[in-house]
Amino acid sequence: MTSTSERPHSLLAESWIFAGRLFVQWRRYPVVPMQALLFPAGLLLIYGVLVGKSMTRLTGNSGLDLLIPVCTLAGAMSGAVGAGLAVPYDRDSGLLTRLWIMPVHRTSPLTGALVAEAVRTFVASALVVAIGYAMGFRFGGNVFGLLLYLVIPVVVVVVFATIVITLALRPQGRIILMWTNTVCTGLAFATLVPVEKLPALLRPIAEYQPLAPAAAAMRALSSGGEIWLPVVLTVLWALLIGALFLPMTVRGYRTAAEGGKLGG
Image (cartoon, rainbow, N blue to C red; front, top):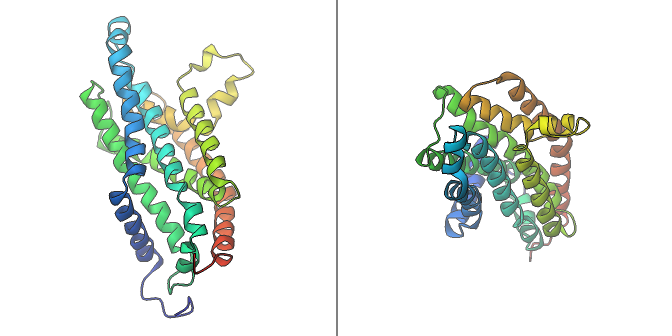
């Protein structure tokens, strides 16, 4: 049976089926979801134990509204990198090739991976916020604002996943991904530094680097402030990076699938 056979399902339905395959895999080997949750949860707990009460006494604010967006974004990207580390194995074992010749839309395994990342990130973000609530965090907006608060990391990670898959399919992909994870975690935590404390030359870079608008939008949604500008900048960054990397991801996936061996 080849990819020219009749396809009984739509691309959306097939994407959800392949996403379900990843959900089953993550349930059996929960390294990826645990990494996406334990990393930000651990940071929040360490912060609460070491400096949370002191910050509350000194400033009247626990600072969780600043830290939770950073931990959520960093944890979500860390989970995406963890999932991406399996891509070279899938390529070398011939799994990508077997999926490529199945009677399904050829991009459905790829879109299914992005759907799985979106669902995983949304659930992990909600759990991180729940942990923050247990530590004293309070969301100041309405239900729509809370939903948008949880969707922002999803948008960031779905776009970031295209970068992860593109890099994972390159030679030495696992090594490249580890460095990518380090750089992106650094970018996330750089948003904690007040812009006014930086040299004037670095302020535009710090204020408009890809993760800064996302973190600023989440903070504004939880505690008030300018919302729409950082939201618009987040969307623009997502569109720009997606337009750059999505075609590269599809080409890299096709090359890896067509060049693989069915026998593994």
